[in-house]
Image (cartoon, rainbow, N blue to C red; front, side):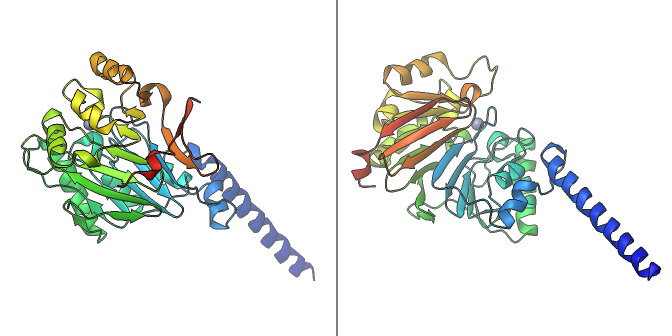
Length: 322
Ligand SMILES: [Zn+2]
């Protein structure tokens, strides 16, 4: 009898110890330098947290682009930001996202594709769309090759961009609008990506410059209109021509810029948006910005990490034919 009691008490001690170790690890997970599940992951696994609704989030990744399109259980990324600025797989996991239907890389520069490899290693990615290099420097070429190798290791298909092939991600549709010709300069090779649902529209432009903007104006001016524009090339003076802004006529513009940058966004470009009455969000000042549509009020709301919040009635825009 005494021996049984001794066995039970040792078993109980082991169980309690394991539980305590697990509890400590789950609690400490967000602060550890490596990724392990935390309480929120556990909560999601047992159905305590529901998935988010429909939203488009422009992450603050310094001077880089990384945009999340999320609709119910479906999510896609357009660009990944530079490596090491944020722990992107962990951030996604904390948002309840363990799988991406699609990752689009607008162009092959580190501030746009830098996290692609780590994403492929730590997140389920079903498909990657990105162009092929023409004239990359050694650093970007090796990032590109590393991502290709990681995708091949995990049997993730990497496809070249194709026009007129919209992809559904939950309630959103994602479509590549251009470029229509092969530019030599990598920034101008940026894919123009249109994201829309029944109520709102977004245009993402990578780091395109005036030449690429003019091309879009020539080939698909009627498809450029959007409620929110991801400002081309971090607000540099080489982009955001008046004709392009007029064609897009966004209600809001998002500048993906690095806090402390002396040159970006360009002052004249910033003023060009302001004088056109376009609402401005800056990731260096506002942090990450999430746009979501409220069916009750028929308004598109932008919420920034720093608390800045604005709403836009999309009643008329909702009737647009895309
Ligand atoms: Zn860039």
